[in-house]
Image (cartoon, rainbow, N blue to C red; front, side):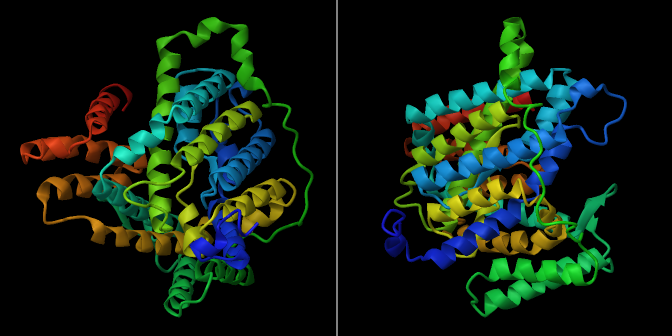
Length: 443
């Protein structure tokens, strides 16, 4: 096992990988509760039940999709990257496709399945890996740093330290709130552990925060340890129902839906993959060895998830929390996947790890990823500007894909105007056109 995952070469061991895998799981376990809530349109009144997906079935589908994706990512690609139904894409699925467009959720699942199949074909052909390797190192580092700022922003929101404000868009939250103080305490504890170079500091900081929350009644107390798995029947195979009426698959509306799933997942995954891999020190000579396998794992999980009954599956930036805790190989992803599968039966325990508990981990990891800023040549304006825009737009637009799109549009413009046209890879021109069309037609 150690030889298969190259433990010695990557300087890791079972303890670090297990802690890393558990940390990643705890950082992203919220999706088990959030995804069913979104896809079932929980809280939306005045709509027929036929528009709502079954929460129990979606919960199981979410866990299974994550399990399959993590298992393939770990055993086949050997990366410490976890996958699960993506935030943002699930909201697009529920609120735009189903609620606004009126497309049946069964047909929306078909769109997810088609996008996953196209991903698989592009990956097998080597086009996805080719595109990723064509991106300049500075922009890759900008993507990584931008994701760091993005997840720090997510963590600050989860902690309640940053809140919405009508006048200034964002503002400081109620720092006297008990739940905010819990996150602050967790952040202080994690900072102390990190500064003392304690192995698995992020993980232990999260566990300590959860315990403090339980003691003071700030996080839910589990009512049980085990529970029966909900039925998957309401959603399993629903993606194939649209084939009974193929006409609904040959419309401009369906094409836009499928392309949106395809586009956002492509670049969210690419950005996350580069970000996590750079944090783990896996990028060599501006290339990510084995990227094709990682991308195929993501695509396969998307197809699997659509069949079981959930929206697009993507790589998670929270994987960086596991990397910070020591994960370096696919063994950590396998651990995360197994925990997702077990979560089907021990779901009551998940309630302890609220956004306030996981927020310190995201904030710390964001700070770690910001170190990639040092690898960008800031004195060269034509490189610094696209990198800066990539980083800046990610958290402000609340979208990794939009940040990448904006920065990559400005890159060829700045380089051409600086007389450095020959340094631009042909792929970057193609991406320029795609991103411009993205903003014109899909935004």
